[in-house]
Image 1 (spheres, rainbow, N blue to C red):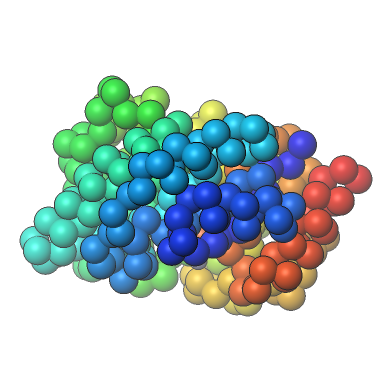
Image 2: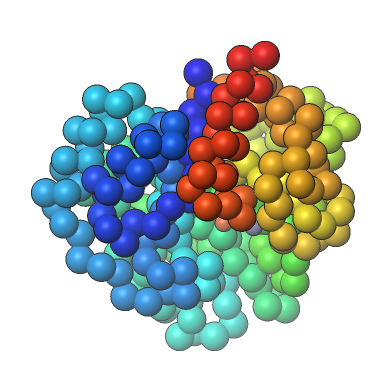
Length: 277
Ligand code: FE
Ligand code: FE
Ligand code: ZN
C-alpha cells in the first residue's frame, strides 16, 4: 500500500495533526519542528505525543517526518549561524524521542562560497557530534535543486556526507521529486536510470522517504518552485509512474504542493488510485 500524506501545521499538537491527516486519507504527514524561520520551539505536550503514538499505531500510520527549519545552515561561513543550527538540530533530535522511530529531515545547507567539499565536511562533523546509538530517529538528508551554493544537489554530495558519518544506520535520504528534476535527474524519461544511479552512488537502502511534488521550473533549471501534481513540468503521468516504481515501495511520501486541505485530499486519492493501477 502507498504511504502518503502532506505537509501540515503542528500548531495544535500531534493528536490534532494525526486526526487531520487521517481525515484526508493520509497515513503519514510532515510538519515543521518549529517556525520555518527557526524560532523557539513550542514545549512538547508529552500526553498529547503519547496519545498520538497510540493513534498512529492503531491507524497503521507509516513513519512521519519532522522537517528542520529552512534557515538551518550547518555549513555557513558565519560561526553564529552554525552554532544556532547545532543548537536547533540537537534540541529537535531530543524532542523527536517523544514520538520515537520516525524521521528528521533537513536541507544539508549552503556552503556560501566555501566550496561543496568544505560544506560536506562541516555537515559530517555536526552529525558525528550529535547522532547517538540510542536515538530512535533516522536523520534524512533532502536532495536539493542546486540553487545558489546548496549542498546536496547531486547524489555524490549526499553519498559523501553519509560516507563520513560514523552512525550510518541513523542516516537516510529523502528524495524530493521537484528538486531532483530541477537538479537534472530525468525522472520523466529515465526513472529506472535515476534509481539505478541512486543505488550505485548512495545505495537504495538509504532511500527512506519521498517529497512528491511537481515542478514549476524546467528540467535542469536548479530552481526550487513546487507545483501541484500535474500542473508542472514533471506532469501527472510521470508522477504516477514514480509512485508505482518498486524502488519507492513502502516509503513515506509527502506532498509539498501548494494546496489547501481539500486539494491535498484530492491529490492523495489520485496518487493512491495511480499506485493501484
Ligand atoms: Fe525541504
Ligand atoms: Fe522537499
Ligand atoms: Zn523545495
